[in-house]
Structures are given as C-alpha cells and as structure tokens.
Image (cartoon, rainbow, N blue to C red; front, side, top):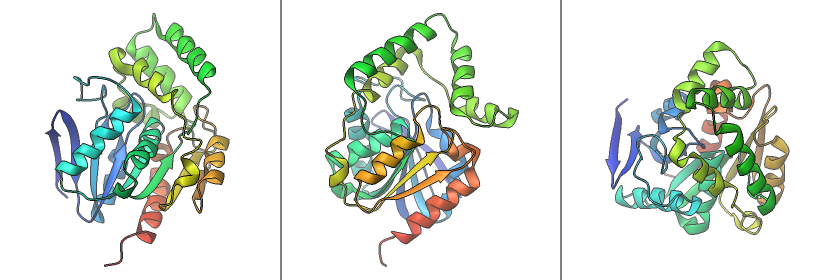
Length: 259
C-alpha cells in the first residue's frame, strides 16, 4: 500500500489505495490523519483525505465556512481528475458532505454521514459558541484536548485517550470560527432531496451530537440506511474501528458502479 501526503493549491491531503474514490472528511479540531484506522479500506478504494481550512497543515485558510470547506474538496477532486466519489464525513465533516451534495450532487456516488447534524437553531447556536468560548478562554490547548477526549469518547481507556489526542489538534485561531460555521448549518430542505445511497451512523452514547439527531436525518433522507454503534461515543471510527470499517465496506461494496 502506497501512502502519499500531498498539497494542491494549499490543500494538504493524503491519497492512497486504488479503486473507486472515497473521500474522508474529518471533524472539528481533527486532522486528516485521524482516519488512520480506516486506511485498511485502501485495499479496495482510492482514499482521498484532506485537511480542512484551519486544521492540520492547512494553516493559511482564508474565510472559514462550511461552504468553503466543500468548495475546497470539490476543487481538489476536479484537479485530481475525479468525476465523482463516495463521500464520508464525521461530525463537522458530515456537514461538509451535505454541503458537497448541495453544491454538486453529481459528484457524490454515495454519502456516509457519521455522528453529525443537519440543523442548528440560530439563537441556541450563538449561546453555545459563547459558552464554549468562555469555558476555553483561560485553558491551555492541552486542557481543551483533555476535556474533548472525555466528552467525545465513551471508553476512557488510556489507549483511546492517547489515540484521540494524537489526531485532535485544535488550532486556537480557527477553532471557534469553524464551530460558528457549524452552527449556521440549515439543511432542513436539503435532506428530502438527497437521492444518492446514504448511510447514517450514530454512537449510542454520543454526548456531542445525540443519536436521535441522526435518527431524524434518517427519517428525512429517502431510502437512507441507519446504523447505531453500541457502547461508543462521538468517534465510533476509533472506539469500534473494526466494526465501523466493516459497516462502511459493506455499504460501499453494495453501491459500487457496475463494471
């Protein structure tokens, strides 16, 4: 398996494997390497895994917005000569996946929306960001990461916490801008118009975005599939990696283009 970390037009990305293209989009505060436990899927698929603006190595980002996150990925696919791809996003990445479908539905072979949401009430969003800013104002990045691990994980094993810390690297300058961008999302009208195969995944004990939110999304997206991972929190891709990869592989194989 060949793994290449590249940079196109300031967008750092990992590209590995071969087969139908599969884009992985990380969550808020994460970096592209956070999908490392999913690299095994490169045996059947060509993985494209970018850093989003203000995350990882993408540290000269310009305006932070869900729309721009999506445009960056669409531009990257265009430059790589990829006509369409399977799109998988976790949390904020799931919002970006929805936005990619909004902007260019023809680019999406399928969608995998993991521990994400589709709508944030405006006033509630403002209060939430203000609360989080106040909580983090005098904390070190290390303290923020420690708190995030305990919120995002169901199992606080040392192994899980260390793995989470390795790939959760929030940038103080851009973190809250990205959070604000998430809380402007309103895809209430979009979901019923999604007509590609869609898999929605939730974690049983997700305290960041409760699983009932993903259930509502499932009910609004025609013919979507819905899977709940038991005994996991917000990052089933880490806490239940083998089962998570199995579910993705089964879904993807079912929706491969006929050769």
